[in-house]
Amino acid sequence: MGRQTIYVLPLWGPIYFVFSLLVVGLALLVVDRVVLVWLERRGWTAGEQWARHNRLVEQEHRRKAASDGCTPHAWEGQPLPPRQPDRRRILVLGDSFVWGPPYSTLNHLWWRQLEIELVRRGYRHVDVLAAGRPGWSTRDQLACARRLVPAVRPDLILWGYVTNDPDEKIVPQIFDVQDQPPYGQRMRRLLARLLPNLSFKFESLRAQKLEQQYAGPRYGYRYRDWEARLVEGENLERYRQTVAEVGAWLKSCGIPCVLQTLPSWPSATYHAPRYAPVLRLWEEAGVAVHNILGPLVDRYGEAPLASVQALQWGINPADSHPGPRMTHFFATMAADYLEMHHRTLLGPQEPTRPLELAINDWLPAELNLQCTRADEQSVTYTWFWPGDVSRLVRLPLDQPGVQFALRWPVPLDRIELTGEGLVQAVVRACWLDAEEGYDENVWIELGHVPGPRGVCAVPPSRRGRPLTQLRIEADVRPAQAPLTLTLHRAAP
Image 1 (tube, rainbow, N blue to C red):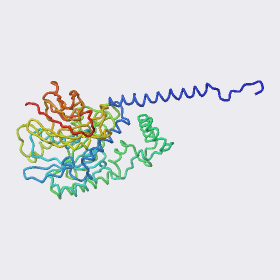
Image 2: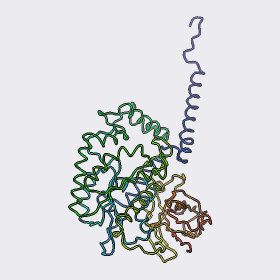
Image 3: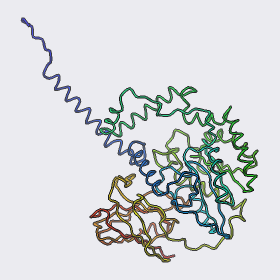
Image 4: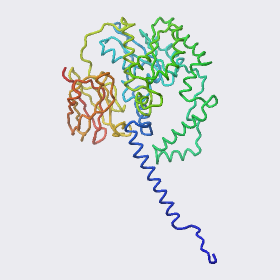
């Protein structure tokens, strides 16, 4: 323009801009697909991988045992066995601690652990049943009990108490669904596909920020504050009436009842203030109270709320419901109480004898497991490799596989896997902790199995230890080919 040169769009400007976008995009992909995934596999953070895993596991469990919550869970949704005169029934009432969270096997639920513990102690004439649904309050549990108890006719009711049970729908709780992000749903879905782990982290952190900023009587309280407010003011007075109704109903039934506390992790600082006002109400209503918080903290020490120690007690980094170590502790404390206060109800204590070798739980639900042969030393099952591998669990090993759980922890000697369509497989297993007896839920590789027939021996370091779960990662062609799994019991 005249004698001046005006650079409207310098050539190097767009080049630098595109190059910068590529560098930033590559860095985001590395963080999303490598860094966050690596941290999740080691249990140091919770993200999209664990959240997807949990949704899958819960969905598969519900396929096997659909229930409205107020149906007694004998096991796997099976019909309730007829009442036998020489057997006793314990009914466990609760909420998500009874049914719902993404345990790798439903054997980790605390009421199942109680039955396993009673059988281990020689009490083989007791059936442990359970009813509950995620989110149920004590009032919901009472409504279920009024309908269920006359049909089940239990000899004892074990009422599990969790710190959110006093919810009388008076104190509001803040939820993520109240949040309206400053960008559309289409953009959220696009980002979730491109950068799933980073998007999950961003939305989680944003929800936490908004929770801190807006928590209060208008939008609702954060979960920990919400639980604290349930045991004060108007909600506590309303809950007093609920507990009084429970006490009066139990008295009319004439069925003994024990309320056992179920702390999510060992912390007196968190749980004691939430227990104290409530447990007095249950005692005033004439219900025996078994508070296990003191023994729990005495044994394992105090684990602060915002700490790695607190996370280690959950199912996995993305779900804080009590994991197998904690549910086993619930069960042993309940068994101790029953032995001390209801010894006659448990029936005769038989001498120790080998437990039944059987599989009672599996993932995914479509395996259609069928027992084809069983004796004292081995059991054989036939099943079909699933055609839809998207329904196979991947974490914590990041390899798709099927899982089987033993009804009773039993020492095994070897595992056989056969099938015409089997090319190769990797077999892994979990065992009970050698000192405390809970399921370690840590997968140890037993070896590679060549097709069409292979055998894996239990390593010498694990011989004699009760095995709890099996995991098989296989290459099967064609898909949905029949396979045979044989478990051999270890010699006494």
